[in-house]
Image (cartoon, rainbow, N blue to C red; front, side, top):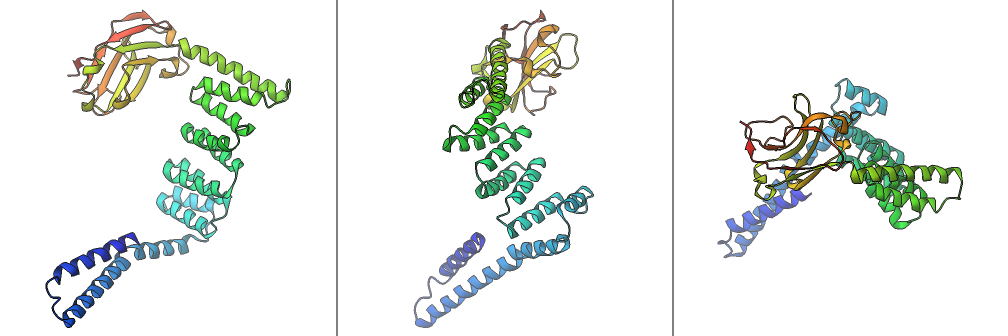
Length: 337
């Protein structure tokens, strides 16, 4: 409809300009009106034949061909390349629109989109389900996002529940879990402490929550001390606008794969970078047992992890071993040849 309106405005503007000098007689005014109506009709006809009409007709034909298949059969058709993923989504959405108050259908559709990494569309479909549901639906959506490691989206849904009911036990529990996944252990402890106050003392559920609090406290303590820090001495003079991504890397002096890597979009690069065991390339490794290593900061033009000609970098001397709390200084002033 917006396209039609724009075409109508263009047509009227064209007609006004074309006949601006002929408003001398009554017949000329009728002529202007006739040409204006013809322009409007032509524009509408063009929109109808080349725009939405063809899309709607194609979608209707597609629906007629697929309407007898259930969701499992549609998924199999997509897996076998008989229909495209786009056609699969179009068909499922069309079926949902034919029964727009079916909460379960919107949840299934949203999960399908999320699985396919169609994040914006998934959020739209989840919102349709949320409009039909209640706090339980919001938390079910939040749990789905947590399962897919989409923690920021999960936090937004959880906070909507807590906004209306700060003592909602399910939301407090999920809030703690989600904060812990984000390594925001202080926030997780706060949520679980609040939840603990709502539970019967010494009950099984209270004991389980207390255990989670103890674990989070241990991780918080480790987080506060369990890192090395690299300071970029010439940070203020770096030509960040010429690069897309930055990497902080712990490398073995003997060569081979990095021990730990932390990456940033250049506009998010801090002057001091903390590297923790969470940044290990092999999660089962031990940052504090690595020997004969050095630290490197590299600015990448392409954004790829592998160094390329034109990248800017700096590195430290070789150290026999790291220990928590070590501080290093690097000037990023060398160019990859």
